[in-house]
Length: 297
Image 1 (tube, helix red, strand yellow):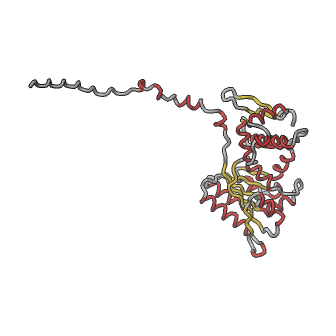
Image 2: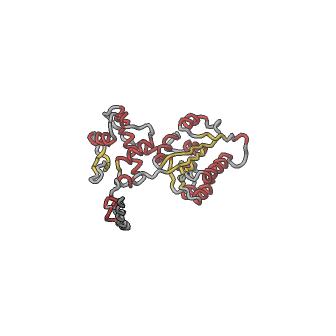
Image 3: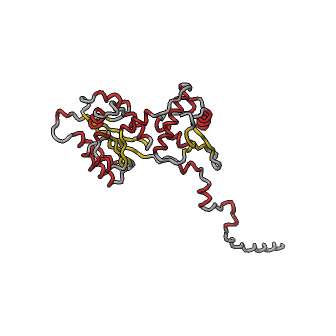
């Protein structure tokens, strides 16, 4: 019987060659500078949204407005609209004896403000509303780190130590008060102070959009209000996306489709055709920039 030939030895396997970057050119990433340039320009211009806690000493504000020579009525809605230009209001509290200031109950309820009742007839000495307001503000300062902005709506100098303590804890403090009843100590201690008279005066200056339908006038009025808000916040470039974001912050239900526009760009184009604003297109992104108001104002 013949013997089968022995199998030929298999060739030894070569060790794998090291892999180099040129073997996978598709995986090569562009340098970081190119990645930055590839970003849409308006993304870098997005509005910084503050998280706001509002504390209102209503008695001080109401008495200040009563004694003011310029305004005779306090409208909490005007103040909230101005604060919404700065960010999202997370906490809203108002302190007073609500039996004495019952005429403010309805507008404050409609604005979703928590009413803290401090009946004055049961207390004597230091204003208990002030004490409760300070305690609540400091409690939120320590327990809610995401709140970065505190609004003290009062002109009382007794709140100056509260402002100092909030600033020590890295909080941005905005004061709101009436000129004649706001102490200089409090005004100078806040990071920013808004006088109610200025808010009221700005509202009276809003342009009248005559000759437009009700829906169009409403949309363009909100747009103009948003543009003025951005200008007050010292925004140098008014991107269309920034204006829409501010409009939605002021009116969360805003949708350009309700006003007959398929996109927000169409709304801006129509506003330019109606001689309300001036537009230009960014060459790199193709997005609209509002360069200012037209002659219709």
